[in-house]
Image (tube, rainbow, N blue to C red; front, side):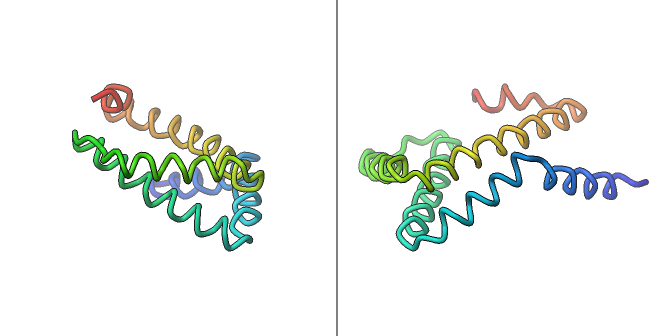
Length: 116
C-alpha cells in the first residue's frame, strides 16, 4: 500500500472516531439556528484572522480582541454553540496529536513552532 492510500485510510479511521461523530452531530445542531450560524461564522473568521496576525509576530487590534471576546461570550451562553465548540476542540486535539507524530518523523518540532 502506498503512503497516500495510508493517508486515506487514516482519514477514514478519524471519521469513525467518537470524537468526530460527536463533533459533526453537534455542528449540525449548532448551525441549525441562523443566529448561531452567523455568530459561529464570525467567531471562526475573527479567530483565524487574530491567529494569523499573532503568528506573523503582530499584535491584534484591541477593538478586534474585544469584539472577539464578546462573540465568544455570547457563544458560551448558548448550550448548542458551546457544546459544538467543545466537541470541535476535542477533535482538534486528536488532529494535533496526529500532526505531532508526523512532524516527529519529519524532524519537525511542532511544540517549538507553537512557542515561536
